[in-house]
Amino acid sequence: MKNRPGLIVSSLVVANFLGQLMQTMLNTALPRMMQDIHINESKAQWLITVYYLMAGITVPVAGFLIGRFTTRGLFFTSVGAFAAGTLIAGSSAEFSFIVCGRIIQGLGAGLLMPLFQTTILRVFPKEKIGSAMGLIGLVMGLAPALGPAIAGLVVQEHSWRILFYALLPVVIANLFLAGFTLKNVGERHQEKLDRSSVLYSSIGFAGLLYGVNLAGEQGASMVLAAAFILTGILFIVLFIRRQLKLAAPLLDFNLFRNRSFTLASIIGVLMFVVVVGAELLLPLYVQNVRGLTPRESGIMLLPGALLLGVASVISGRLYDRYGVRMVLRTGFSMIGGITVLLAFLITLNTPTAVLAVSYALIMAGIGFTMTPVTAYAMASVPPRSIAHASPLTISIRSLASSMGGVLFIAIMTFFMNSSSAVYPVNALQGFQAAFWSLGIFAIIGLGLSFNVKGLAARNTN
Image (cartoon, rainbow, N blue to C red; front, side, top):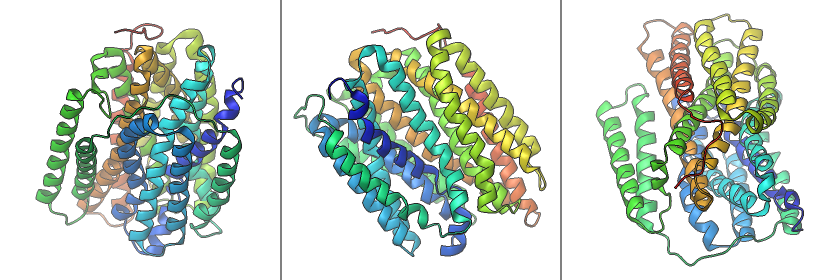
């Protein structure tokens, strides 16, 4: 088994693929869910963003848990939580209970990704780390891109609940697989969990997310929204200050003293904001404004999902051969150019083929960006710091994803409600504003990619 690291991590690959798939699978199903449980866009987006939020909050604690408990123990706990959340969300009729199910799912998924990365770094030999990082990039990129496409094909003829029920047998089968293949790796420690850090991070990020969402709701109190946002920022500052003082922090923010790691982290955050925005906004636009069916929406998104997977594999090889600069700039040039072009093209009758091609090119750009920027970030820190760099990277990207979803829906809702036009023109204006915002984030990422120095990051410190 020691010579077969791929077999050891096989159950982790499946579990993380399902966890990443469930992040975005509801994107295409949201219009149907809104009709079924009688909610608006502002409420509906919480079914997606609360998943990102809980995963983001859990990741810092996961770093502590990985050192405290066994690999197998954490795996069965996290997958068990994910399965329970899946069952609750799929069988509930009330919005609040579905949200509870998504929260439990997010908690399980938040434990899985750091466990996946850490286990890979421990069981794969150094000469195969590049291929292993490509596997991580494929899981993190392809699964979320496939989610909306699969959901669109399913909910056309079936209830959105099938998305949850069909996942359960696969999750249970994977638990049996892990029983035979997954091994305990790494050393354990007896450090105590800093409860204040958990409290500060939970209140901070939840408050900030809720405040941004509240600001976009029609008739909401801007004073109350500002209060939540400021409270969230305050507790995030307290969380960061505490981490800088602790001998064993949940997240080691001292890594941001490394310029290359900081730059790669910022670019990675912008990349995830863009991909979440594209995966969330386009299905809502084509179904709510253009009137496409979920199946048509899913078919439109499928080429992009497949192209992202291909680009992720190719970009890893290009990174090994040419370094980070060429691949990263190519990817963000595609993302920036197409998102800005798409902001111009979004109308009441934009051809579906144009939307499909635009989305596919954006996903290809994401594929060319994701693996190189992750590899560059990990290569920019000394080997002894990788264990801290991995959860920090995952945490900020998860939180950026949750904030991105809330932000774009808030922008769309604000401009739609502020418009003097009637439906569907006011909805179109909201989507146009959101896509312009998406383009701005992509252009900023493109500009930062030109500041990346060297063909590959050098280990420093």
